[in-house]
Image 1 (spheres, helix red, strand yellow):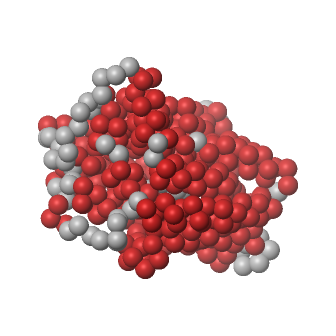
Image 2 (cartoon, rainbow, N blue to C red):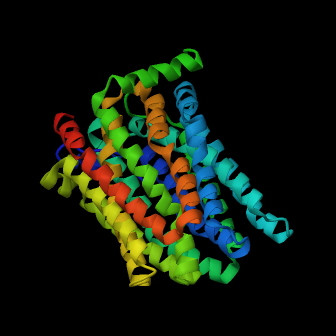
Length: 418
C-alpha cells in the first residue's frame, strides 16, 4: 500500500526530540496495528473456510473496508482540523472494539454470514479513517519539524513488527481458537489503545501551534483540495501512489484465496508465510534513510513499484511452480516495497503543509491515494471470477510494471526539487 514520507538527505534528527506525547501516541497505534494484523488473516479465513466465499465476494469484502476512505475522507479531514484529534482517536478505537467483537458473537449464536462481515468491515473502515487522519495530524504537534522523519520511521517500524508477528500469532490463534474467536484479540488491542491515549487528553502538544479551523465544512474541504492542486510535488506523488494502489489492492484481496484454494496452505502456514512480509518490512524501515542517501527518493519509489510487480508475478507463478516458496517470496517483495514508499511520502506531506491545513491535506491525499483500493478490489475480484485467480495476478503484475515505468521520470523530478 502506498502512503508516506521523506527525510531530506536521509538524516536522522536525533532521539532527544522524541517526547513522551509521541511515545504514548506511538504505543496506541502500535498495539492496534498488531491486533489489526490478526484481523487481516482472520476475516478472510472466516469468509473462505466457513462461508465459502467466491473470488468476487473476497474482492467485495476487501473493497468495503476501504470504501469509507473514498466516501468520508475529505470531510473527516475538515472535521479533524475543527476538533480535537485525541478525542477522535479514542472514539474511533472504542467503536472498532465493539464492532469487531460482533463477529465472534455472531459465530457463537449461529448468525454469522457474509452480510455481517461486510457491515463489520465497513464500520471498522470508518473508524480507521478517523483514527489515521487524526494521528497523522496530531503527530507533528508532538515533535519538532526536524524530528518528523524519525517519528514517522518509529511508526513504520511498529507497522513492520506487527506485520512480522501478527500473522504468525494470528495463524496459531486461529488454529487453536478458530478465526472468529481470534478476532477478540484485535478487539482487545483497541481497548489497550484507548488506555494509552487517555493521558494525552490532559496534555498540550509541544509542536507548532495550530490555528483551529472555524470555516464552513465545505469551504474547509475546498481549501485543502486547493492547496494540493497548487502543489505540483504533492500532486505527482498522489497520482503515482493512486495508480499503484489500484493494482496492489487486487493482490491483497485475492492472495488468501490463492493460498487456501490453489496452494492448499493451512492457517498456520499462511500466518507464518505472511510473517515474511513483516521481516522484509522491518528491514526496509530500518534501511530507508541509508537507501535514500544512495539512490535518492525517486529511485526508492521506482524500485518499490518494481518490487510490487515482482511480488504479483511470483503469486502468478506459485500454483504452477514453487508453491509455498513463491508465495513467501511475494510477501518479501510486498514487505520491502511498502515501508520504503511510506517513509518517503508522509513526512514530505507533513513538512510541506501548514499545520492548520494538515488534517484536510492528509485526508484529501488519503482519499486520492486510497479510493482506488475498493475499486481495485472489486474489479480484480470480478476478474478472478471471470478468468481465474492465478491469471488475475499476471494482470496485476503487468499493471504495476507499467505504473513504475510511467511514473519514473515524474517522481524523480519531483523529489529532486522537493
